[in-house]
Image (cartoon, rainbow, N blue to C red; front, top):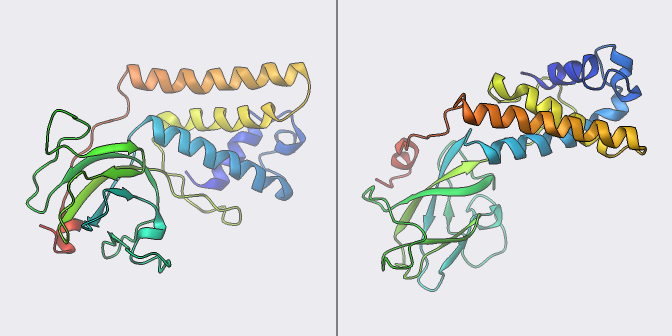
Length: 232
């Protein structure tokens, strides 16, 4: 689904009785598109956090005195940031975008999976925050392959042809979330009630998808990008 299609659907349906939706004419006023795109990005982050819709990999090279590895762009070698250690090693053709929602798996250079968050296991690694990998006993120069749940790429205001990558069973949830955000910023009791209705619709669709297992929430570990980086 392209951004233009989503905006058209909102105009015809959830926002059809509002001026922002051009009163149901199938388009959004140009000056209102940035506002809706902000809501779209919020909705995509919500949905991509609730469901594992995208997984990616990154490579971290351990540093002797660093135990907490922050998975944010300034520590990627491609970022060029003024930091002492850029320990995130970019994978060719897939530069790190700082899009980590949470860490799913960690492997050593032989492909062996580490236990996560087990204080009784002396070899366990930890995730004290969604974007932090804690290595209690770092080994300088050794690499760790990290599989993580990634968010959707940010949608830009000026490109209506951008693809919104989302399972069709969740498209209604995204529309409902955007409508919830629009109405929640409007004054009046009636608008607040309408806002809650759209939020309930969003949650209801997501719950139904979860209960009926309509989205495959499992993920398959693939090391081919790490192999290209000389990891395995």
